[in-house]
Image 1 (cartoon, rainbow over the protein chains, first blue to last red):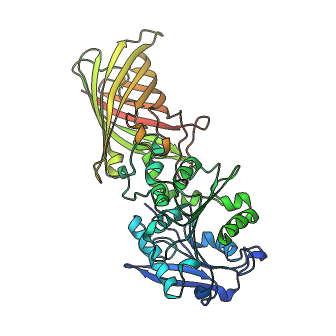
Image 2 (tube, each protein chain N blue to C red):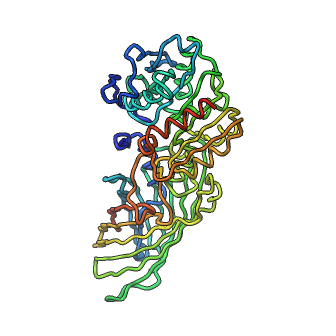
Length: 259
Length: 218
């Protein structure tokens, strides 16, 4: 179902605005085992930060590899001030240099957990973790938030998430066909949000043609947790950060983290 | 940021968009009584700037001078683990005479069964054809709609009872051979969303596709 692309992991400051530069000493590519496969991850920050400071665990969208999301995590690392937050992201199986193939919810959950264990071993705790999921990243984030995370998620950011596998099928066919007609990957973020007790920020674009806003709203508004905030932007598409600009994107995310 | 490089990752959804309501019109002019027709259809629904090949096979028999029964299987759906069958009847109302068009109507049903969890859906359909026949040449315009009796099972209220399509085509029915070409507008009553793919639409609604068929008569 998913086909990862190549990744060269040349994380350079050259393409970044100077405001979002990352000190080279704070750029760490690492690997962790996930079942029989090897997952490649990227940590921005100091390892000591893992024991003391807030870490943003970024689950990237359906790009070929972490290379595509380098500029995004660089911005996240510099929210508020330079190098304020540690950021971790990784490539799902079959993306970038990660081996294997992403097939279903089980493989995605295993990869999520493998990287989280790497962070847990270095001292990360629930009260200092923010999970941010972009588009495809919402698929592993949903079940994790609903109790499937070894470190409990207390703050979750869903950026242009999908809603469910059935909705994708039904939006594509115009019929009430269930997703099981074409895939074993059945996810339901609405159900996950019902079971997630923590804080949720949902960011979406009104003109999103990849993840339609109406069904995403239906799923996110099923959230029953302690705090809910939604930001839906008119005249914006699935590439939300590019459409609304870094300033607004950072403002909302940082307010939520500090909430 | 461009998402085009990632289109291949959602190919399963793209094809899913087409296994359903993109099936071509099989019989426009009823066969002669006792006549059989077997053929293959190749649908090419448009996605992004290209199109996708979707293969099906069918058989039809003239039950009387005005009634033809047909049955079909969509082979492309089988690749995804879904059994997709359809069957129905085409009834001639009147033949074409000169520039005066002939008319026929059709009704039938479509069955989907998932091999993963045996989820089953049945969609009745009905349609009407207007055609002009001059010797072996047949021109047609057709309207068809699937009925979704389980529209309420679609999540977040996105289900619709009717899934219409409109097509125009040409058929060459010469002795034992029939060749078919048809252009269809599919589901023009709703937006079709496929992650990371662009579906050419009509005024922002539905999809489009070109369909080919080849059959033998005996």
